Amino acid sequence: MKTEPARHLVLEALSARSWRLCDRSAAASDPAKVVAYIEQPDSGGYDAAWVRAGGVVRHYRRLDDIFTDAAELSSGAALRPGRKPAPIPARPPFTRRPAT
Image 1: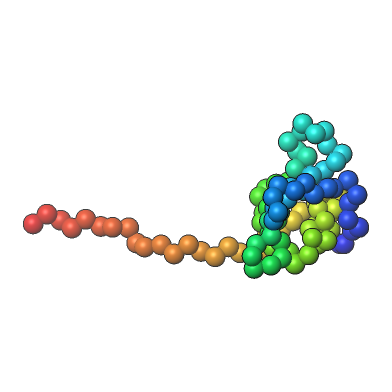
Image 2: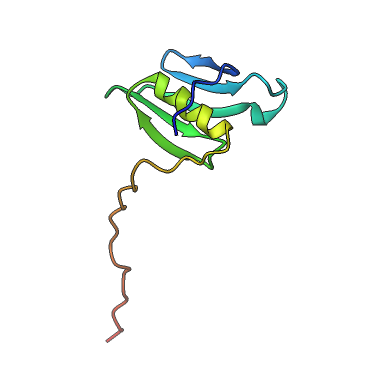
């Protein structure tokens, strides 16, 4: 389901390559006004960490796609993770040799 980008959302610059996506309909002092944190990595595109979706992180090619997902989220739709995270390699636990 695609919806029109929500007009109550605004980007607040945090640095030259990072922003906070906020909901203007929430009070300025309300922490729930933050919808997502967005960064622009050197590799291109945008990474969005969705605060309102339980910390789901997704990569986007365009900012417009972030606003579209934000509008869907505000209409009650759920965001799903874009892909399964890569497993962290692990070593087996150390075992103690019996004393001889």
